[in-house]
Image (cartoon, rainbow, N blue to C red; front, top):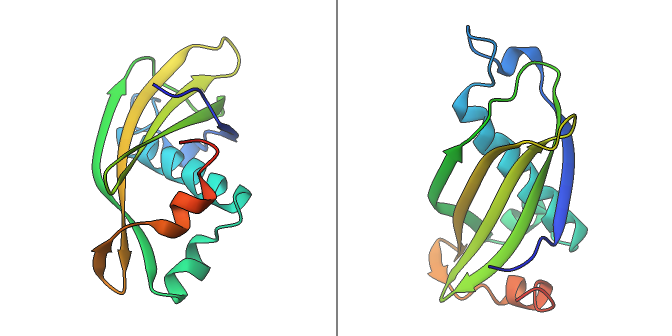
Length: 133
């Protein structure tokens, strides 16, 4: 697996928690997505601007392993490592609680590129990510 190339810090908002006080499982996907979008921005790729040009990145598969729950107001960081397999970019992501560095979740998110609605070679991403692949 590749090493971490990007990190992004966030804080749990109270409305993201379930009745048990834990972050609802679906919100981990949001945290992973925010981190991927921030990574794209860092690389000069704006998700919305790409869409206006007919270039869409779409999630084709998500795997998440939940380890230790985040709770309301926890601060955490989400890390990102990147691999490429054919037309698929694999985003390997982890969430760590900042107060004790506990691993809270592990995600592997497969992303593909559609150009004008057609599954395509993601050359714009290949160029932007060449130092990481």
